[in-house]
Image (cartoon, rainbow, N blue to C red; front, side, top):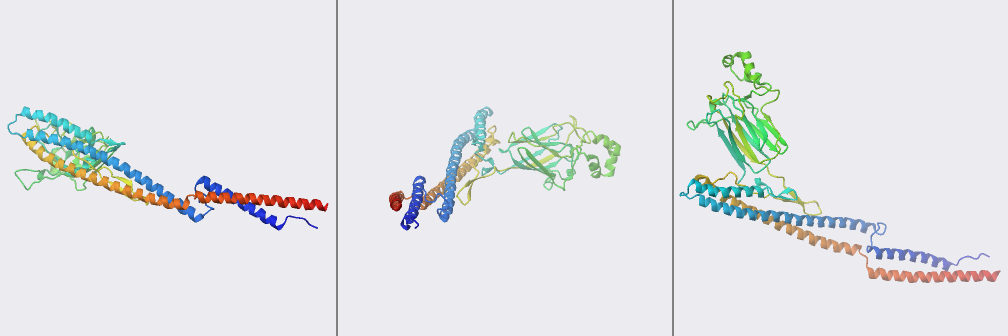
Length: 457
């Protein structure tokens, strides 16, 4: 006779193990607050909620970025209000300085305050927000291209032209005509040399600008100078005709550009070698220099150094030259703000204004010109305020959309993921009771079996 566990005991044991697993699962769900904290519980729900959770986190980050962008643009707008007040005072000074009855001394008094306000504008335009520039001067509505021109007065001394472009990067289209007598043109940004023509001789002398000859509009060798802090690139037009005596191939270049009779008049090969060797270097000219980005001022300097060919520049000599340039400031790179979880972005528009550094009230003509330019700049400030206002409205609207979206998504995920504490608590209590009952039944079954076994002995 074989005595073993009863069928009912085996069933109760299986139920006991099942109840224990359900107790452990209910306890874990109550402790974590999540119904799908483990992938094996519900694979589909786990993947869906993980993806939805990532989307919610990204949308919340985007909404936070948009709120920061609103703060950034509001800071710009506050600065523009200060600029508007400065321009209002400058306009008042220009109106007073335009009085025909004023003396030169009177205008100088107005110019003193006017200059200090220009300096204040220059400081405002360089303000930063977390090390990023707040304003881009090139974004000013009425400041696109700065024209510069210079014509020799016939003298031999250095001549210079300056212009403040209000930016550290830009490009210069330069036309340089030194005619038959060599001259040397250098272009500086602050203290950094951007361009050096060397002692330059051109073949455009037959087309020199002449007010009495409207047909002669002037011609020159064209050079494109692109610059930014730590970078410069000079591109010369292949059709250029001029020769730089500082170039390493100056002898051959000048000989090929000169007629035989003129070459012989200079003394032929031997005489020209002596002349050219005074200037020739082992480098290519015109040459460029990398700027430090230490200034927004561009300077055009002619004949800063001694030189001259075929005749040296000196007090008794004269020279004729002409240059013309167009300076275009480079815009600062625009910023982008994350707008939603799908990776879409909203671009921040650049906002800026002009420092009006070229204006002065020293003369009646200068005061009248300042009046016109200040009016334009005041219109620009109103336009830029509109740009700032539209950006703030757009960012605020998108942030509100994201907040509503994340709220709906969070509620949806909560319904899928969150534990129903009432249901889980009831289930836990039921399983604990059933587990206790099964344990009691199993204990009684073992006791009965033991008693039967003892009676057979």
